[in-house]
Amino acid sequence: MILDDYEYSRANKAEERKLATLFRYTSTHRNLSIITSYQVFFSIPSVARKCASIFLLYKPRSKQDLTMISNRVGMEIDDIQEIFRNICTNRFDSLLIDHTPDTPAPLRKNVFQKIEMAGSDSDSDSDSD
Image (spheres, helix red, strand yellow):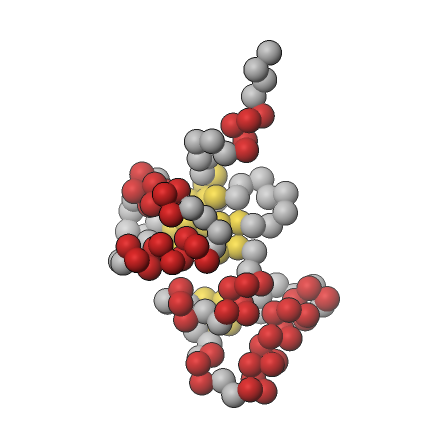
């Protein structure tokens, strides 16, 4: 299911309950994947943000917005700034953050290119014998 720029701010209480049921119950118990697309990160309903396991981000214009977004998606601000400064440098580059359990690539550039961060868990896999 795809929700594209759903105007959540105008939803009445009944619509809010239905949306919460959709994200909290229906998606997990009825094997439904939900994609929500918004131009502005802060327009995403909180129930959608809290239930999301994957975020696809484009660099915001405001440093303050980037700080708040990093907090909401579970990343350190220094890490997300480094990625946008050194890896996702093109205006149209995106950062995908995947919190799915056992994902092979928790961070990706433009959906498919795995990003390796210094000090990540994958670095500790090397033998030190």
